Length: 217
Image 1 (tube, rainbow, N blue to C red):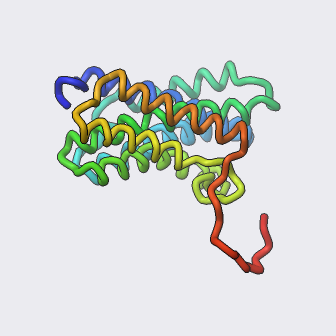
Image 2 (tube, one colour):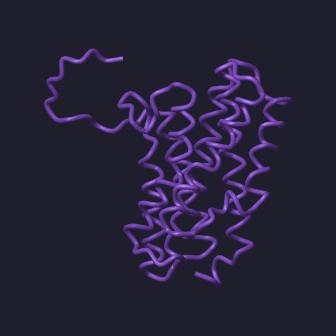
C-alpha cells in the first residue's frame, strides 16, 4: 500500500474528491437560495463530512480535515467558483448530480484504501469506503432540509455504485492487484454506474409484497 499510494498520491486524490463534492454542496445551496455563508457551510460539510467520520473511526486523529489547511480551503475555493460561475437555474440540479457522482466515485476508492492502510479488514474497509462516499451527501441533504437520497426509494441508485467501487478495491487488495490503474477503474466504474442509474432511473426494490398504508410522497 505504501508503494502504490504514497502520501502525495493519497493527498491529491482526497483534494480532487473534496473539490467535486464541495461543488455539489455549493450548487445545492444556490438551488435552495442560500446566501454565500450557507453555500460555504454546505460545501464544507459535503466535502469533509464523510472523511471526518472515516478518520474518527480508524483512529486517524486529529482528522485530516483539521490538520491540512488545503482540505479546509478547497471547499471555500469551490464556493467562490460556484458563487461567480454557477450555471443557469434550470441546469443547477443536473450539475449537482454530476458533481456528486464524481465525488462518490473518488471517495469510495480513497476511503477504502485509507481504511485498509490503517489495518482494517477488507469488509470493514469497504464499509468505511461507502461511508466516506455517502456521508457528506447525507449531511448536506439534512442541512438543506431534504430527505437524504440514500434513504429514499423513489431516487435513483446512490449507495450501490459506491458499494461496487469499494468492492472492486477490496477485491484488488485481496488478490494483490491494486494499482493506480485499477483504483482509477474502480472510481470510474462507480461514477458511470451512478450516471447510468440517473439516466435510466435504476432503483433498489422495496419490501416484497409490501402492504403499507402510508401515503407515498
